[in-house]
Length: 453
Image 1 (cartoon, rainbow, N blue to C red):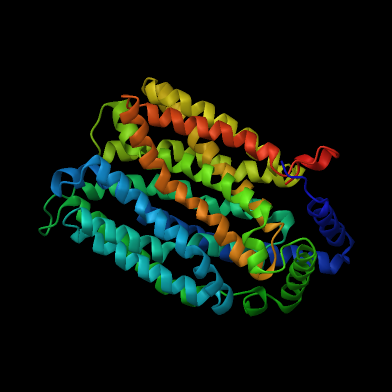
Image 2 (cartoon, rainbow, N blue to C red):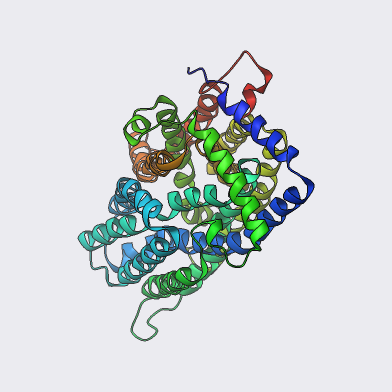
């Protein structure tokens, strides 16, 4: 158990007081600047997230085709799905420091084009070795995107609204599965068109979309508000001043160097929490088409793709609604804990339920696991500053190794307990455990505000 300095709560209150004390015209300029930045940046970042998540997760739809066409075994598939997260986690730290140094516009453009090219190359997989290699390379190139966006949002949006902005960004997760599921299912059915199998068309087309988005990124994004020629100078100055004031406050509590940040207990506790979150959600994502196929008794294809989109439609509402409530009441930690508890309980239900109850429980579980993530990221972004923020966010993003742990842990549990549901039950138990961990870490029992992030 770690006692938190009152600095986070006081910093939030101080920032809010500064916000409330602004002259009317400055207040209006700040509000306009935030609204302009949200309208311009968030939809584009969401589109990038959709493309990113689609290219890392479409292997789930290719699972059965890879087994029949290339001879990839279930164990080899689990290893390939997870290998992405090894290189992804290890390369996030240098990638985020590079972004902090050279700017988001250039770096995001480079890595997006690179991962799109590698995703396209997956159509040439011939066996285990080539699949393993391409998944590792995909992890290297995608490593800088997600932690980079989390850092990028701190450059543009004050803490009082950042939970909502991150929730909107995370909308890309369900959108990727809502539209990506049917798209991947459709492409899988393009058998022998132009001499290519459906799974080859899937990797080719979805990877090429990333290349196009990467090219557009360089011309669309601006590194910081000071570079935003599309924003009036008065609005730009109000936003820059507000963000500078927050950064100054965070520096008083944040680790002062990269080395101190790496060994900071609070950063390590955030890493543990995020690792468990990622283990839980990827345990569902990688096996979602398989679970839906079993629930509705249909093979992987367009029908399974459409049904797989249903849980993500509910997740859309949760991602918009829950961070807004948490921001309003400054209760991110409590909301995150309760959300994980609900998601864990639902995860115990869907593996052996009937089609209707199973899809309903699956929808609740996925909604909870998706919505808890923007809540979580309000913790470190209110604590870390400057280069420590760039490095710390990337260190915490090492928790994406949970994406490697999840499929392999599921396979181990299924084989050890001789049950196809054992792995899902184990992942559900970890979700419930994490709900308790969030309440224990950074608890401040001496004040009611302890429930605030």
